[in-house]
Image (cartoon, rainbow, N blue to C red; front, top):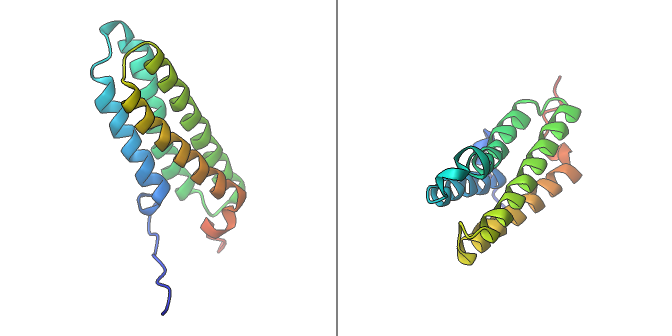
Length: 131
């Protein structure tokens, strides 16, 4: 039995991107119910940080010819993911989301963090070194 290798043509093909996008959409959906007083604070912040993981992954992918740039953008992704996780703590503790909603989103944050950590430890497999 031969192993079939999946060709990755864009950042959108990465499992970490798909999970980050799923998380960003869950964050968007769950923050619709946040109180108006949080519109320019927690709501805006958690939406921005969760979306930023996907956006920075796209930038990292575009810069994968240069290891330092690639790692820098992945580090940004990891920071934004951690920020999202902290915002979810606030949302739960303020009573804006249920424990179940929190668990689902925090679990995705954890998975994304592990995947990003793995990419940061071994970036060479993602690089195009033909420059």
